[in-house]
Picture: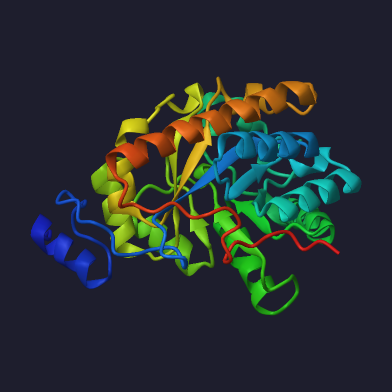
Length: 318
């Protein structure tokens, strides 16, 4: 008869396989850095149109805030025509901002995905249903690659493995990067290790992870973490401004992810006026400036990357 292993044996097995047996309660300082030796960078989500990118760049200059990455078209890039995608890429290239594009076709767009309409069904995740839907998603990525975009959000492990193989074999540009989405639901060192092994270049864990969990994830992987400093109310509404120094100390290298609002379903509808999004983007830059102020006051030894850091994967513009 099988005899159940004790907790210490389980934890030892985890450790043997490169996974911490416990969360990082001792909160050691991370020794990892960005290539420029910085600890943290700024990521603003919800740049839905080219006018929003202009507003982002303008407000960042007014406030003297470096913006390193923009998460674009959360509503889905299929709502943008080719001219707008190219304009967005051109502005970002000129301003030294890396774009991570959210592609259009996904589970909620699939007419056959009836489970998405129920609270319990929505918990099943955003993974693609079948090969047709995955190929549609990749086709939208191809539009963006042609427009010059070189960064994409991914939330399906199978899709991540497939597009990583495309990158490896030159089927898509080798400088393309992939960010693992919060909708992928990862919140443990084991999950983060899997995502890194599948080819992700950066990972967004769930918004409610504690400092010890972040510490455990950081000890397991090398790619940057994208950590919510402020998050929409529907995800919990946390504003972790005063935790920012400790989060940075234990989790570096990381992006401060800024995404306030009511819910993503409310604020990212494509038919909301561009001017509303312009003003909202400016408010997000203000929040970034407050976070940087707190960091400079409480942890001046922790370094922020300068605008246009050389390792960013900027759009390729002719």
